[in-house]
Length: 121
Length: 109
Image (cartoon, rainbow over all chains, first blue to last red; front, side, top):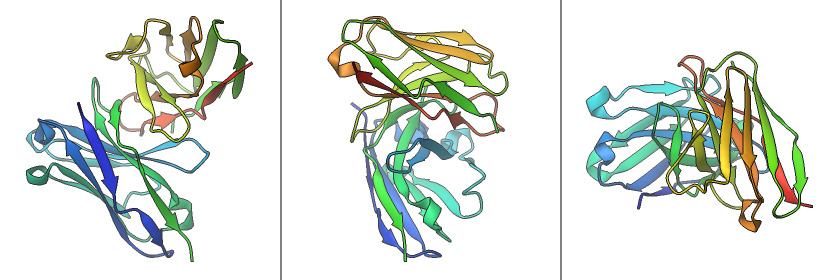
């Protein structure tokens, strides 16, 4: 059974930084493509970005609102996905989910339980 | 950006009845359309991809149809565990980025 557990959420001031982690219990994590999605509490879903497996190039793609501020990375030796968030804005306040990518690119197969990030002064 | 519009925003249905949820894309997405279910306090769950293919473990009462710009998720006979919010998502050809609809809440009538 695939399990994804996010951590690192919390309260941060505007302009600050935060790094989320996603620990994955996936036998073949190094071959998995992974994504981050966020959700403002009570609102809809927003795709943030995706990282391919290293064997597929390890490249990343980002949504326009976070491009240049957020960075997705992975440590396959630790089965862990990261989301480094810089220059945070109040509108970045949301629950952040890590997901696997399955069946097709950008299809979000398995989800973690989410981590709440609050950006407020 | 491809805008996804779901209707209705809320659907009131009695258990055992059929529910049809609509999703419209602002431009064609071919069959690159997924449906997710989200219950309160939980992460979304993938139900359908490729507009009509159910993922592992999803009951046959869930079916997806459509292509191009018009899509439908049908729940043939609502069970108590089906009351939730449903989101559609297009993932047609990066770029542009994948986008979600605003969701349809299926509530007990």
